[in-house]
Image (cartoon, rainbow, N blue to C red):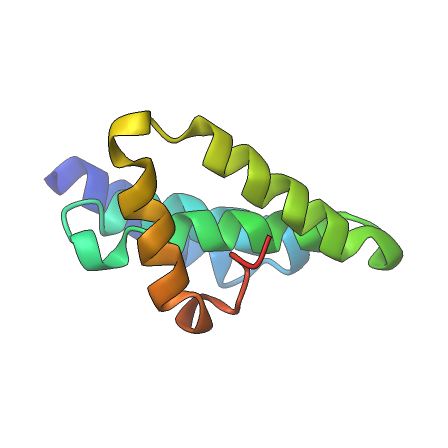
Amino acid sequence: MMQSRAAGGHAMGAARSLSGAARYAAFAAGQAGAVAHVAAHDLGAAAYAIKAARASAPKAESEAAGRLECHWQRHQLPQEIRELVLDDQRVRNDLCWSVFDC
């Protein structure tokens, strides 16, 4: 976990000097590594990845790109935890920039 947290911290640090999709992608990587041991932070990396997808698309296609990423993420969930994650998304969607409204 120490190596994961260190790598996550480096990614978060790198994000500070970036903008747009690259910044959100770096935050997603940092969140995934730095807080993997804290269940309450499990949605951060997914939310940042959706923001990265939105930011990488042309403005007119931004919302659709975010929904596509959200649907893709949900498709990847193992059946055993699917309902737990979806319930967590519903409960904490407002804290995650409402990116899970897909």
